[in-house]
Image (cartoon, rainbow, N blue to C red):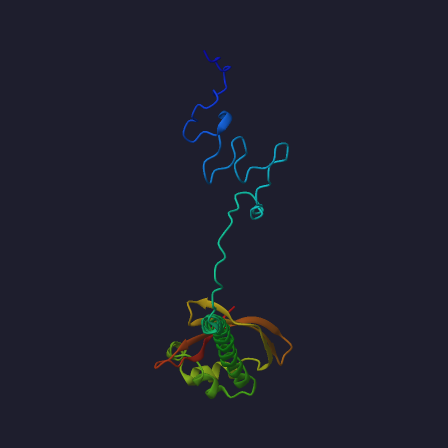
Length: 213
């Protein structure tokens, strides 16, 4: 009787299993790594793990979001030129309107003072009939030219006068012009010359309409 082979060994002359090498060692299949070897790409044992690729730096500031780079916008210079022209027109219109108001006020004050001054100059030169016709219609209706001339002839003659800036008296057509009157006898007094505006067709004429004080 032949002796039995020890466990784990193939008896001599016994056929090997298909795909198994002699001695029971398992061989890797074609194209496969040897048994017990690490898969490709695995770092050797004991080596530090590979570093991950660094991303873009975080944005600065709280709540910041990394934006996409936008293409630069083309600015049309005609838009800015047009806006500048509009702004200039607004400034000119507003400034011109304010200047026009002040200019008209100064012109009106000059006309009012001129009416009072011409009347008093006529009295100083004793041109009483001319001074009478410089008065408003209401003043001439209360006193005839003869009465006006006679009254002035019986009084001391006006020698000089000084006028101050006109003040609004009633509405926009009645003003008073403060005046200091000096007479040939040495007396002087203060009086307000009343000047009223009247006219048609957009032109206003100013006439003396009595005194106050």
